[in-house]
Length: 150
Image (cartoon, rainbow, N blue to C red; front, top):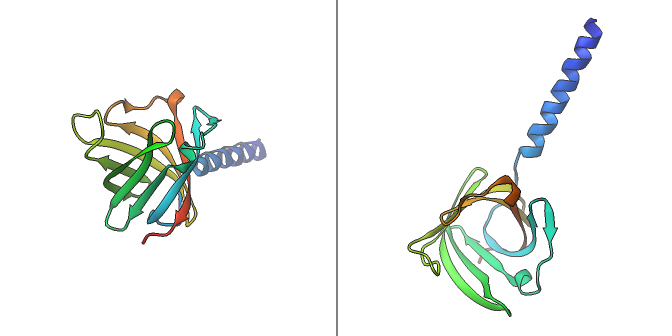
């Protein structure tokens, strides 16, 4: 009976360890530089991006400022936005003070799932227009570093 108990405890420990690793963020790089959108995962399914969407970029600078070159209206009509960001551990908060059709700043909060010297993966948690995103609308954005900060 004692050996069976040890086996159960060991199996439980392994399961808990695996779960905590799955939820952990992997941050080994910095945000500084220009990141190009590579993929979007919505509710667990990878969505097809248009050629225009794949040209969207976000540039982070060490002064906690950012600029976005983001698709507004197809076909490939882009708008540039500037704002600020705060990266605190795995929490990334982005503020865009002059967002169109908004009565003030647009704020979005993300969980950084992966940040390396070449890859960035973030999960959208909430924004100032919609509030918290439900689990069935879980959105993950995947970026690849296009160039280092200038």
